[in-house]
Image (cartoon, rainbow, N blue to C red; front, side, top):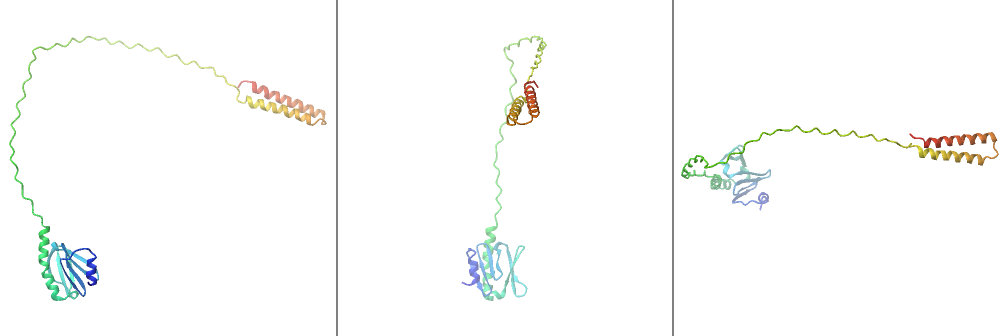
Length: 216
């Protein structure tokens, strides 16, 4: 098996007829004419082939519908190539026959019987006895009674405590404690200074205490 035939075998297609030469490989499959050379794999559908003729510069031209396949003459023995192309004709005819789909025969419409027209509707029958509807009563619509106005909400007397009451009481106690501690820790100080600190601390503590008990 040459290298060109090996390249074709990798395609996984079955060759119905084949020809290998020093410069290429030709194969006829179920649907295509395949040509393998150093440039790669080229193919043409069998059903699209119209003629095979001489091309330019020592080539054969397989012409199809809209495209063509160029076969170099030096790639194959000339007599074997002619015999191979002669055997191409029945494969092309078979492919054309397989691809041509016969037009479906027109179907004969089935005769349908026209259904008889429906009978005319019966006229409405007059009832033997019919109850008369009761007379309508004259209804008097009463005006809706006005709803009593809802009482206005009574504002509640809001009273609040001073939010700074507790901090002021604590500050008053701390001031008093600081004053007593200063006098106790400095017995040898000037009496006027001690008296001033004592009176000022007591006054400030009392002021803070009364401020905490007053309302906002």
